[in-house]
Length: 298
Ligand code: FE
Ligand code: MN
Image: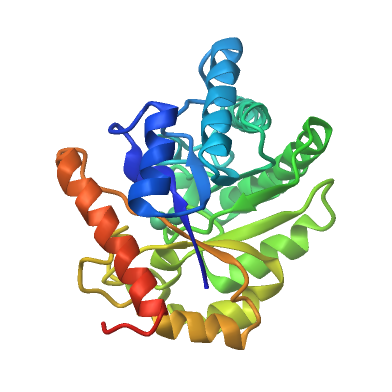
């Protein structure tokens, strides 16, 4: 199992490219990383944003890190994006994601990922509105893929989320969306976050590794790894007790021929946790995962 790192842990803490790059390499000893839009906002003025993006990309390369792509973070996740109640807001979301693609290219990498957005309460519970928004979202994702192709992007990753007001959320919804999407100008795949896929209050008996992998396997491009209790989407470090056993997970992935794919460790800390605590917890998390995968004790 290949361990990578989503840079979510650095949000509001390590904001200088060279410092963060060195911390990842020297203290966390990870090579493959996924940048978070929480460290660089796609909405910032393009010239400044792309200059900063280039600086981040260079710092990672100089530190010998492999930047696999960029991914929406906490800030971006709060907005309705493509599932918004009004067409003008969906257009703004499309613009936002296009800007994220531009920023990603400026960083010197070629993959973006994000959840699609979130619906208004009334829309989510109205079957007809839900179907309309779903249909419109398919068109917008296709349009984004066309833009991505022109910009030099390689792929778009969609992250399923465990909320009724969002889609896709279940294994069947994931399959349906890919079938309905059909051919796109660049590949659109899923990034499966285990903390979402195993959230029992939302998925019930479908909160199951076998069900997810057997149904969604052809469409999976990457994973987010976190510790969780399966009750909420926790994003805990592996210093906490939880339902994810990384050795069991590795064996399951191997069974489905997916063990070559990177598991990007995505830990989210409370803003008020001290930087010292976060760094220590991240070091322990990475050390624990490596040791477990090498045959160490739980
Ligand atoms: Fe995630
Ligand atoms: Mn998550």
